[in-house]
Every structure is written in C-alpha cells, then in structure tokens.
Length: 76
Image (tube, rainbow, N blue to C red; front, side):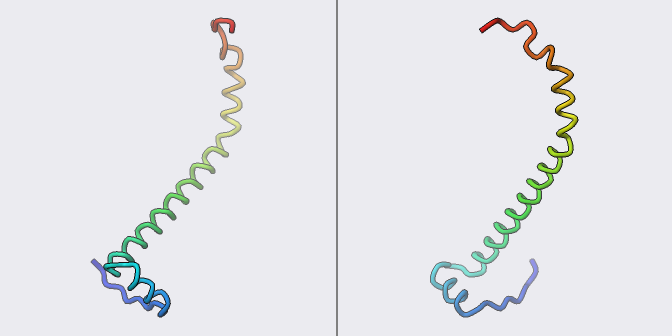
C-alpha cells in the first residue's frame, strides 16, 4: 500500500466527518469508483470507434446476404 498526503478543503473535510464512519475507506472507495467509471467510458469509446470503423464492412455483408436472408421462410 502506498501512502498519499492529501489536502482537503475544510468544507469537504467537515462533510466527510459527517457522512463517513471511516474517512480513509471512504476516500479509497470513491477513488476506485471514479477510476472504474473512467475505465468504462474509455472502453465504451473504443467500442464505438470499432463499430464505426466496421460499419461499411457490415453493410457489405448485409447486402451480400440480402438475397438469402428470408429464403425458405414460411409466408406470414
């Protein structure tokens, strides 16, 4: 574990004393949650970029198979 010195504004420090039983655990969990959210956003951006880059290929495949997509289906 690494020790980090952190200076908090009085307002934040006072709120932490009110809402958190254990300030250290609260801060560690808040950092973990924030990092996880950032990681998820980064992953989502990568997925979006991947989908966009394969858009033309997907359209070509759909066009290539359009003739057989409904082949041998019962009439509805």
